[in-house]
Image 1 (cartoon, rainbow, N blue to C red):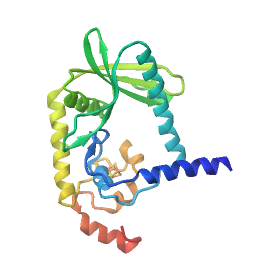
Image 2: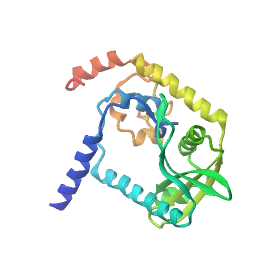
Image 3: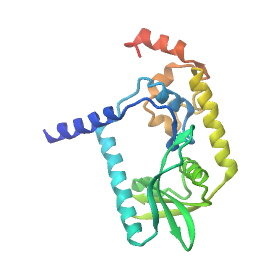
Length: 231
Ligand code: SF4
């Protein structure tokens, strides 16, 4: 009884959040271009399970606990802060901290024990996101703080702003914007479907039906609509 009600609550809330995407999110940085394209085009996707949505909520809760501690330590200059408004991308950093008269952008990530134990370096996609925060806030240093959500252990990595990396990421997003506007589906990841991103991708099914290389979105929609209800 409660399980069904709680699951429905999460699924309904997720559906209500679905809206047209007009700008990139910082969390898109470093991700598969094709998956982002499909997200912009609201392509048919696998529904996220209520269980997974609850895990996201749990992650947010852990972030708040960490932030509470940092507030108590007097380190937080501002929290949940949006990057300055501009055309390309939007995003919200967990916090900006002050430590020994220097500013740091903080990005908190939570993960399970298995991933945490094997984490020796920051994940590339997390570095990409943090680099963009540093770029838009014009801050030279950041911290990636990883939390083991099973044991509450912590690992942290100091990250220095890398202008070349940020500019490359932004250039990649601009190129992708062109493809979105021109209705050109980007190529698949070269190691589809074994890439880790593919394994958790909501678009895996339709991705497998498209060509491996770039293709026209209009053509692909025709193909899909001949198999399924219209997009
Ligand atoms: S299945 Fe893989 S290649 Fe296809 S859209 Fe998803 S992440 Fe990209």
